[in-house]
Length: 96
Image (cartoon, rainbow, N blue to C red; front, top):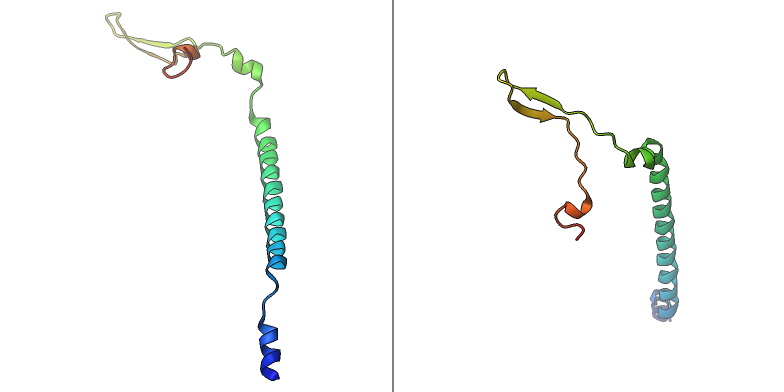
């Protein structure tokens, strides 16, 4: 009789109940990870936003007057600090 009671204690739970338990646990972990990911993205947005310039200032970039370096003979050696805006259609791999 004792052997029967010990073997009865060692039996595992039924398989469908165990599967439902694992589904509930994994669903909870997935939901927690999703909520954490959304919170991280929203937090990153609010952290970065104050340091970004307004869209209007990005669209109207004033071009700098380049520093031109000439030799004693009057020949142009180099230009430093020039900004050139290139349309996206002229950049390799973009546009048509």
